[in-house]
Length: 117
Image (cartoon, rainbow, N blue to C red):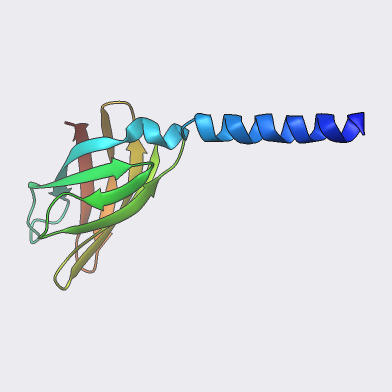
């Protein structure tokens, strides 16, 4: 009986700690400005997109661009941006206030940099 009670108390404490500790990916939560550059002169370059991160989930802050994706605990990020028929997939790494990576689409590719707002 005492052993069962200790197990229940231990399980309850572990559950409470899990609920009280936010995910490390939440470290990157907030508004971000992403600057997109193309490595192909035929593709447009210099676009800027605002995204938001909440609990490690990426979402767009702009009705014209749909953003989705996920930030892992170490800051690695995978993102998909869609606007009409256009779609681009990117990956990279975020730090506390900035980030960078690469992206690719059907006919274009390039790099991106991000700054926390």
